[in-house]
Image 1 (cartoon, helix red, strand yellow):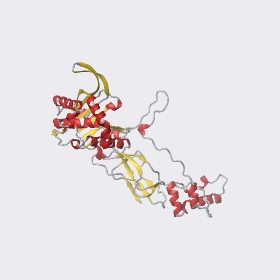
Image 2: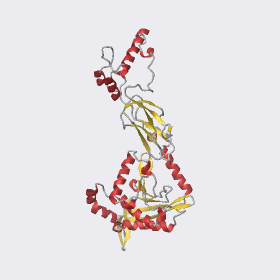
Image 3: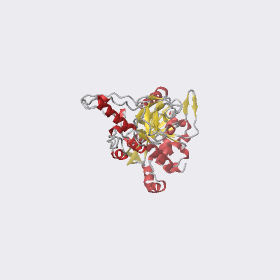
Image 4: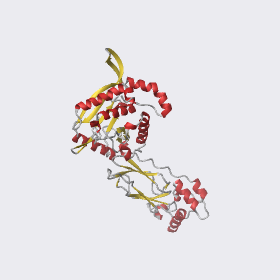
Length: 406
């Protein structure tokens, strides 16, 4: 027997919610197979089997609150009966109405024989296929199940997976409503954002950037970049590099507030806001001043895949000194992003739209993007915020300066 336990939570996580069981008592499991999922206020954690066997019992139901290292259930070898299996139905309930007591006793005895008197080979097949021995037609000389019987039997269709509560469709009909509880992640996001609004002195400054030079750079070197690095050159890596250079020039933007102290960070860990089915998540690019454009693009692609699959870890999202969010991927023209506490600023990217601008005394059509910098006015003055955003604009409009560190 092996106990199934809740993974060890980080210090910032006190409890979680058992989201889904992927196995039922009596079903076979393999080592490393995902048995259940637990949602914390930051990530969804997978609970995997530590050995081959059969799920014997479960101690927690879907929706229950669980603590670090709490026992969820038990996995045993395939030869032991599930501890949570329901008791056998009374003989009179399973026998025909006209059956005599002796006939009912015979039926009950045959069912017990077929369930318990299994050879090791048959027991293994039954467990692997998820069969109920009572449902397998037996052709053995004593009414027992043979290997051929087990091989030819078909397991009942599995019940459809339980859909997440938040994904449930609104019932059809006029003026319908549906009440569903917030997920733990969504609830924590709401708490953190409201906390920021209540404690920080939020202010947003705006600017615009002509993306033509950056677009020309991408177009000119895209094929060579992909051939060498195996990943496309996107705008986000250019913004991360520009933001890193601007953070070096304006260290206050990279600082944070702790009570009455200001903490200046001598490193640059930039969070990239990523939308997932469970809510907004912000994985962290660490030491961006030491990362190449290709390294940034590869890390962002990996984060996107992990977010889509719900595989982001607590380590992926811990820390961060500055954040970037890109509402332009959804068509946003302008927004005022909220900082990710305890950080003091966040950069908002938006949609690129061709529109007329004045350039060298002429009206030209250029691909323009609005930029937004939301910041905590308690420690960042307007002058610093504006100059920081102007520096990002200048670097993106002349990317050679950024790549040459000029």
